[in-house]
Amino acid sequence: MKRLLTLLTALTLTACATESSLWGVQPTPTARIPSATVPASQTPTLTNSGPTEAFVPTGTFTLAPAPTNSVPTQTLVQVATPNPLDPPIQYKAQSGDSLAAVAARFGVDQQEIASLKNLPAGGLIDPGTLLIVPDRIETEKTPNVMVMPDSEVIFSASATAFDVAGFIAESGGFLAGYQQWLTTPGWTSGTDVLKQLTRDNSANPRLMLALLEYESGWVYGGTPTDMFREKYPMGYQIQDDDQGLYKQLQWAVNQLFEGYYGWRMGTLTELTFPNGESLRLAPELNAGTVAIQYFFSRQRNRAEWARILDPNSASGFPAYYKEMFGNPWERSRSVEPIFQPGLTQPALALPFEPDEQWNFTNGPHGAWGRIGPLAAIDFAPASDHKGCDVSGLWATASAPGLVVRSDSGVVMLDLDGDGDEQTGWNLLYLHIAKAGRVAAGAWVKTGSHIGHPSCEGGASTGRHLHFARKYNGEWIIADSALPFVLSGWTVHAGAVYAGASQGTLTRGDGLVTADPYGQSWSVIIRMPDE
Image 1 (cartoon, rainbow, N blue to C red):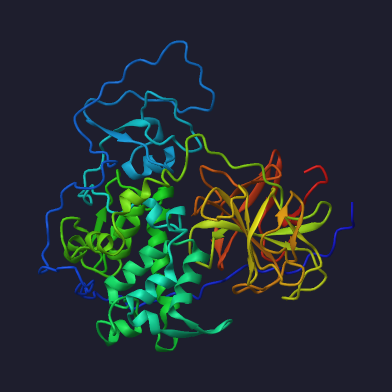
Image 2 (cartoon, helix red, strand yellow):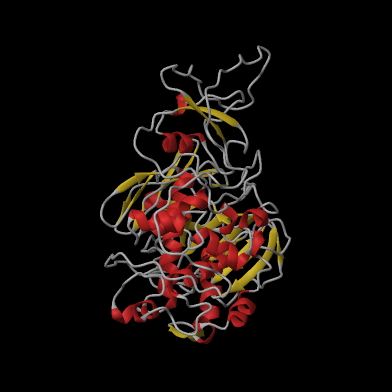
């Protein structure tokens, strides 16, 4: 084995600036789609008029005894007998549900959730599985109305063929002629800003265009709705020297993903409005709907929020979205469920060569940027000096696949080889230097060279590899029901301090703890047979 090198500083990725705002309640703009008719604003009583997939709780349910000859094939939870004093809710598991997340949304213990099927203590529950859950939420809840499919929030396969540039040009609005100065590429068109940001964040471009038009009239109108919306098209007020479309769209993506992935993980169970009023989220909702609800709760009072989300209102966002892009639920049928029954992560190796010392420098953190779904981890190559020069060591392919993107510090490896990073498993390698970087279109094997770690692509304070997983366009949280396992090492989240996530890697009795300074406890070496 090669001699271990001196451990030196390897700091973490900070791709997004710190975000602060002066919250204010902004009026909802008048709809500007040419064919839309917009009635006067009113606060409606919402009814459940969502898609047929929405599950409406009714009545009570008595469990039949399980067959005596059934043999579980996985670790199961102990199912409790429902308390007759707590009329249960019948809930059909949705794609991406885990037992822990469902329990958190319903406010019950995992052991209180019953089913006729075996439920995994870890891992994903198969979509459509009937769960019997005690009805314990006594506070007022949001309406149980699904307004947006999951596949319309993330950059799913339903948006792969969507012509962003063509749509913006044909719309002929303010966005079509907009340009912004960005540090790396220089003057950039509004079209390219939106395309780059949605691609990098894996956010659906249709949704971002609809929100931009709904909030400011940038897409169809020749001028924004007012001077405030010209400066801050998403209504997020920041410093005058930090204006521009990119920051506004990034803020919007962050809010959507806070709702989407927070609901997916069970860490978000209520909304808080600008005046401090809170409202419990109906536990039967899907992640896409919660993303929209969360976004509009950030800058609207509750009455205005309710009007915007009313699916029966011609001035509401669901009707507006349908007017722009057609019925999203019909489009979703071709790509959902996002997670198929029995899905597991394919075998992945540590993303560097055997017998080379690397350091685990950052546990689960934002997939793209400082804020976002905690899907990424960082590894830094050992060196005798710190800094942002290019490392001589190689980042390598963790599995066989097709390189579908190789530019601006990014390599995207498509494991199903269909050439579409919106389908199947994909691996993100970030901060890969241009010199020696594998070319797009190359087919690689496990262990093939991807490129050299550097600071290229995004903001970085030291050479390292930022590494994350996607499945069907959705970032996969590193410490989740789909564990991030590399050469048998499993990633676990840890405490966050000074912008870094401690995190750990475990394998049997082995423990590696993330450290941004490359201390001895963060050292990890891939063995030749891994």
